[in-house]
Image (spheres, rainbow, N blue to C red):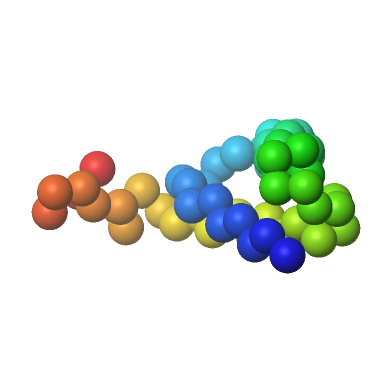
Length: 58
């Protein structure tokens, strides 16, 4: 059962998340040879001030 976590800034619409989840699920089914009902996708939305790269805030 693939569990796919997507970390991103908040602000996407529900439609964008729905479309992305569908596209990722379709890709997982095709590539991983699994069933759609076995794919779980979680959006982890964290404010931009919580993101750092190379010790510096993005």
